[in-house]
Image (cartoon, rainbow, N blue to C red; front, side):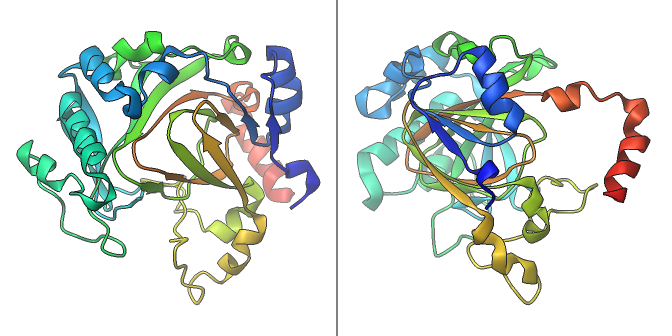
Length: 306
């Protein structure tokens, strides 16, 4: 890994100017320690200190769109591996409470899903892991589609970091899992600030230059930003370049209060512990926002020549 691509960690939060010049402009991920320690969410949402009751009181019976996995604990991006189901937020809190009460030895929440009228998918679980439901990318704020916003009442518990205040944030989303979960390896077409409110996440990251080893899905497919690989057990006879994959990866451990800047195009896989809650901000990079469509053909020719 080139030294210029090494992920850095910042103990003090940068100013807007420092973030632009030292972090965002480099297009390299960065860990921002204690970024959300001053959020109301940081003190109020923690499940171990009554946070589930607080969230239940704030959001109540608001219906959210939940991801129901057919391959838990891994949540793949393509539509064959999951479905989106409407679920009252209060019902998901009930699932989390059951998990908190029973711990690792108790039921996984399948009883709760059946009780709330959601049938589990046919089992394709890995290593016998139970099926899971995950609140993935539930909008708290969305500039282009306000009708999509499902958890607007939580917005006042979240503060946009000062170094992002001049950015045009496209959306703010909630990510909440009741049990351990893993995302498929993918990249985002926007800059991303992943803020961990409670719990712990491990993030593996690869620069865009590692794309050949990650075998992205076809460009015009339903999940073109996701990798074809199953990193748990890649078939090297089919994907031979994957044997070099881990040499180009970097690992970050996020604890409650931390944030991770993930630039557009960086592949990442996220492992979440039980009852982990995160919020992310997406905004368009300066490069993409300044590109005019009439220049596309020219840039494509330059890229192909390179």
